[in-house]
Length: 305
Image (cartoon, rainbow, N blue to C red; front, side, top):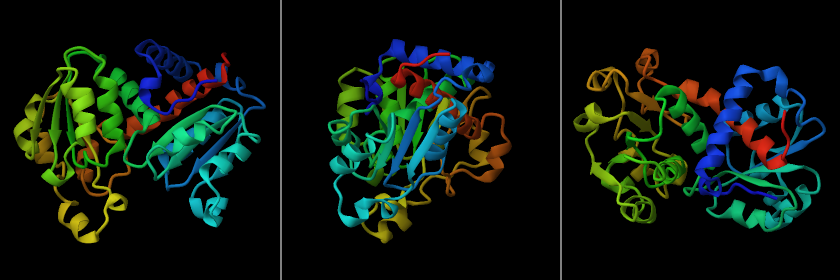
């Protein structure tokens, strides 16, 4: 039985296989309509979500399976004080696979020790978000065409941004990568990510607080929102929330083949006028999430078309 808690649980070769299956699903959807018939996905979301939860549900339904679960901790027995271990021990008897999101780092790993079915980490606090990273990789393959020799700018909340941490982790395995880390000092990339996946691998990187200065050198700009739910006091959030806003003027500084990604939801860090720019890939990115999650569910359930 396989779990996916961290994107590094999947080899580079396995990621290529998942991308190939996702591409085939997009090209031949009817071929996959019943591959998970009579299989059940449980979505245990202890933290709010729109895209991740619904794309998991859409993925399983599109494969002919069924879905059960909850969308917030208050509607589960966690509100009564039930432990993660007990919740998962029970739910794994009702489902064939579990997608779990939790505000505490490491919660899906704890869950995996108490589950008799595969666990997929759908985001754990400010730690990792492997299926968003798979979505990002599928987007990069479709929008850019390669994973090697890329300069990737990460902008906004790099401290709490689990999607940033996971994508840096994944991209550190490819050749010719350069990271540009764009944030206010208070939201810099955590040292554990920088040391393990950038410095220890000898990857070139730049830290800056100016988006305009680096726009022209980027292949990918990965925007993130400043996450109110991660702050301990509202004053700090209000001071930092508008640190970086991507506008048409800033897009004019970028190359014609640059692409803008964003895990969404967007608050105000990308001006809506940018949506009309063909380089804005974030809504296409959200749609890719369904197909890569279909491929991952199939892999973990060991089914094929």
